[in-house]
Structures are given as C-alpha cells and as structure tokens.
Image (cartoon, rainbow, N blue to C red; front, side):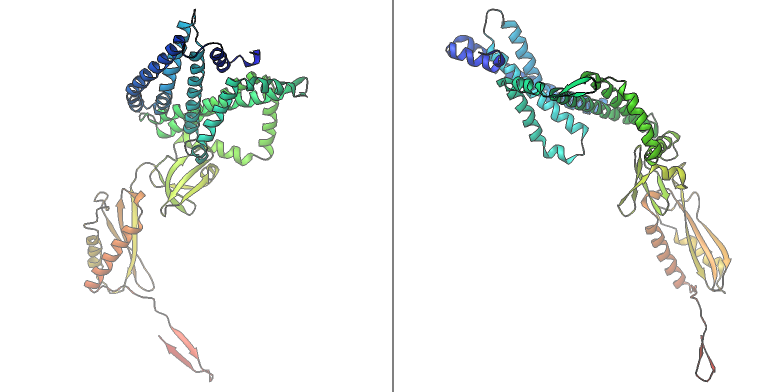
Length: 434
C-alpha cells in the first residue's frame, strides 16, 4: 500500500486481502469489540444517573451532562485502545485500530455537539443544524480514514501568499481558524459552567455574582485568544497594535458602547439596581429581569420587555420602588360636595379597605382632607402594600368601586364641575344658561 494510505481502514483491508476473514484472530477481535460494547453500555447506564444526580446536587450540571453524553463511547474507546496495546505484540490488531478510530470519532462528535448546545443554549440554529454539524465532523474522520484528508492538506500547503515577512498558506489559515474557534468554544463552555456554579451560591449578593460571572467569562475569552494565537504562529505583540487601534476607535465612534459597558459594571457593583427590583425609568414601570454588561431588561406590566442601555440608568433618575423594602404607598384621591359630613366620609373611606388582602394594617391606612377646591372638598385615602410587582390598577379599581357604593348608600355627593355659558343673540341681548 502507498504510504499516504497507511490508515487503520487500509491496514484492515490489506489484511483482509492477504488473509481469510474467517481466521481466529479476526473473530477474536470481533468478540472483544462486542464484549466491550456490551460492558460499556452496562457501565454507562449505571453511572449516568449518578453523574447527573451529583451534578444537580453540586450545581455542576453543564459539566456532568457533557460527561454523561460521551460516557458510553469514551469507555468503549479507552477499552479498545487498552486491548490494542495489550494484544499488539505478536497479534493482528487492525480491526481494533479501526474500531478505536471510529469510537474516538463518536466521542468527538458527541462532545462537539454538546459544547455547541451548552454555549449557544438559546440559539435556534444549533438545534436546526445539529445533524449537519455531526455529519461534517464524521466526513472529516472518513476522509482521514480513507487517506484523502492528508492528500488534501498537502495541496492546501502548496497554496500560499506572503504576509509581511511571513509566508502564509491556506492550511495555516484553516488550522488557525479551527484553533481559535475551538479554544473560544471551550472557554465559553467553561464560562457557562462557572456561571452556573456562581449563580447557585446564595450567600453572595446577586449583583456580585453577576459581576464575577461577567469578569470571569471575559478573562476566559482573553486567555483563549492568547493561547490560540501562538498556536497559529501569530506573535502576541501584534495585540499592542490592535489595542492602539481599538483605543482610537473608542475615542471616535464607540463612546456610547464603552459608556454602556462601564455603566453596567458600576450598576452591578454598587447594587443600586438588582434583578427583581420594581423600578420606574422615564415613563416605564416594570421589574428588572436581566442585567447585562450593556443593557438591562425591564419587563413591563403588559408583558412587553424594554431594553434600556445602562448609560440611561446612570445619567437619569431611576425610581426604585423596592430598593430597601417592597412597601409602596397607594393614594386614592376623590372629591365630595360642600356640606358633606367629613367625619362620616372619612370613616366610610377607612371602612372600604377592610377585607382587602393586599392592604397592610401596618402601616395603617389613613384619610386626609387635602384642600378646598372650586367644585368640592378634595380628600385622599392612602394605603400601603408590600407586593408592588403585582401592580396597583386592580387594587385601585376595587377600592374605587367600594367607595362609590358606600357614598351612594349614605347619600354623599361627588360633585360634578359647573359651567356657565353666555349666548349673544343678533340684538346683543344676553341669555344665561347654567
């Protein structure tokens, strides 16, 4: 066989041509592979529930789930490699070598698909192209087994172009892209793993946990790039040039982006706004559901979500309704006609809040006579609640309905505005309508 075709597949085919496949050494390898497959299946079936349970208990689900997915082919591959090393002296192991290559390919396929699903958990394209990605990886291994991939690599090595003082080939570019993508993928996966672990530590403040996860993921990406670039053959000193260009870009066109990122870390560190807080920003009131390095997500009462840049939270006034506690004062203003028994009206207003589950007794509800207006006397009923995230419109509606019924029952008049209109006829006489 040519040297270029010295692969496990061609070694096995060469042996099959020279010898009879019914030879005992071939069947012994078949029996070993079948036995290893059955044993690996039993072991992985017994260990998977324990691994997943341990991961859930210690909040390492992302890591243990990956181990559980590759456990069966990993055990099968390692056992086949061990059998190949044990039998190599004086025995043919071509079938074991071929099987080990296929099992290793299966480990790589499952690990790669799992990493993509773990890193891009919310990406639809991962689920859509999962089989395509797995098929592409299998194609690479098939090309390697058939000896086509080394020949193709030699052809790519012949195509090159000068970059400065260095000669760059297409093979170097492809290897560089693959190295950078792989290291970044592993870094992002490890970042997700640390994020899940940190977010489960209830003893740390939520904002501090978010800051730590953001910093760790950024550091991991930087380390991944610093590892990948030397593997490609790029000198790290070029990063100084890139850093200078980035600084110029920040100075001219990326001020807002940089400001939002800096503001995001300030918000997370000072704890002025936390996830779950009920806030009012500009004309929007809702609950903070997510804080990122660039923006916060504000879930409004109608179910919509507002994406608000972090700079807005730093440079404008934010009304935090649950910063130190979740107590919220809910005022209801109404008017009664002149001549109304104010003591009776105040007693009736206090009576309307009885039976309302959301109204707190401490602080107690209060009634105030606010002012004497043109059309009537203005009064205010003030109650306190501790669940502002549920909104106040429903509570106000219930109380207003009770107040209306109570006032009608006791003959208390809610005054309507009075207007006087003067009409001039053609003879300049005046007619008054009231």
